[in-house]
Amino acid sequence: MDYNKYFYGEYGGQFVAETLIPVLDELEESFFKYKDNTDFNEELDYLLKNYAGRPTPVYFARRLSEKYKVKIYLKREDLLHTGAHKINNTLGQALLAKYMGKRRIIAETGAGQHGVATATVCALLGIDCTVYMGSLDAERQKINVERMKMLGAKVKVVDFGSKTLKDAVSAALKDWVTNVDTTHYLIGSAVGPYPFPEIVAHFQSVIGKEAREYFIDEIGKLPDVVVACVGGGSNAIGIFRGFINDEQVRLIGVEAGGLSDKIGEHASSLNFGKKGVFQGCLSKVLQTENGQIATVHSVSAGLDYPGVGPEHAYLCDTGRAEYYPIKDKDAVDGFFELTRLEGILPALESSHAIGFVIKHSKDFLGKTVLINLSGRGDKDLHIIEDYVRGL
Image 1 (spheres, helix red, strand yellow):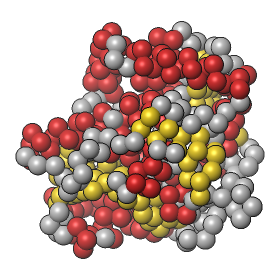
Image 2 (image 1 turned 120 degrees about the horizontal axis):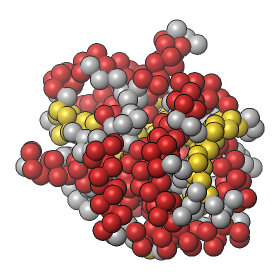
Image 3 (image 1 turned 90 degrees about the vertical axis):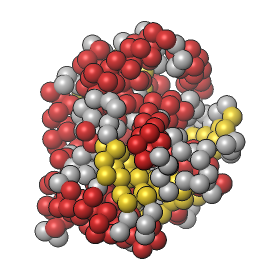
Image 4 (image 1 turned 30 degrees about the horizontal axis):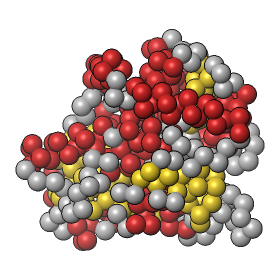
């Protein structure tokens, strides 16, 4: 793959205020110093195993497979402590911040899972924590807001713009510019200025490594297809990294198709976005006709974002990965199918990937398909209820 410093092909870079360049340089230097450091990795591996609950299993969804005549396997990130893949990254970055001597961590969150995971590891490591969250998302995810507060985090609700994830990111960046000496910005997805996309991909790549080892050791061959939902793209890049050099394995990312293909009614940056600079990097961004950042919609708060990680933009352009949108209805259908056939409640984010495989099951007949089940659906139950009631 054509990866080099700062960029994935033509995507990535550092499009930030000059005051942030020294702190990004410090972060890059520290990341490459510690990512292969024995002491750092021994501490991280201990926490991933004994605190977070890794490795997570790969589960053969028998009843779902029998109904759709596709061999469907699930990478069970929903079984991790805090209920989603987010803790892989928050443990890694919080530990990195500790090694760097940072006394405070800030984060942004949409669905609340990254905020909860950040608050959790800050409580564990004794680091001051502030989480920014759009007011619309805070209303949709009240339980996660309370969880963050109980864990000792300060939750700052953002009441400008679309009042969603992109505005939470903007508020967190403003905070970081003001407090760079003491504060680490723990970005939750594979977005933002370099080296953040690489840092997040590195800490999430444990998903793909474990999955690949499982298929080699237990099945004797690699899956035919790997599918994951894509918002910013951390869970997807985490599982894709395990198979990216295996050209025979199809990589499919599923975006939030929302209500329609009309701008403002979906969050499908790779299918409908244009090249643009957004929140620190060059990627594919949903824009209005005059180049402003477009409003977006998804039934899932975690996919409600107008941009995407630069590595996904690169994989899309080169054709190594394919990206397709799925409507809200298909995602909700996926939620109910997995819940009622396998007794597993998936997050609405993950439900997009499940819904895609179900809707296009005829294209996968007889194939082995691995879906990254990135989180559990407890947080989404009232959203599902409102959706079913037509609200």
